[in-house]
Length: 132
Ligand SMILES: [Zn+2]
Image 1 (cartoon, rainbow, N blue to C red):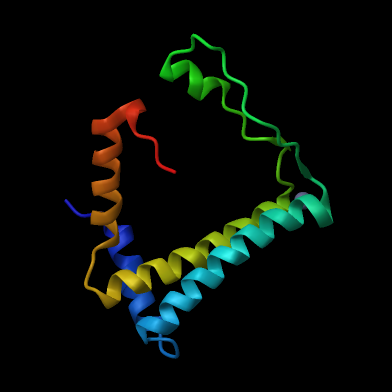
Image 2: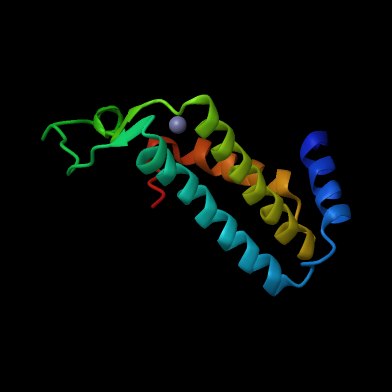
């Protein structure tokens, strides 16, 4: 059974995308929207200050199992997004999803199928899947 919300979202994107229907425009907007997600996260650090980034080389115990490696890997984020920054990051992620769905529409790909295939791949590979 297909996920109805995901299919409806793709259909709505199809209806609302009028000005930038060229695949070139969609690719440019998708990349731009990804940059805007990163900018929103950056501004939560540099403008708002609700979160801080303290990055350093990952430290792993020498004899750690793969599961233990995951538990030791730091995200380097201190704090939580405040309500405002959370709203901005969510909005930018939503815009990013819009252009992702638009790219799927261009090539008649079903976004839910893409998510499903990736989920199945992750479930099959488990902890041995290192996406980078
Ligand atoms: Zn904030």
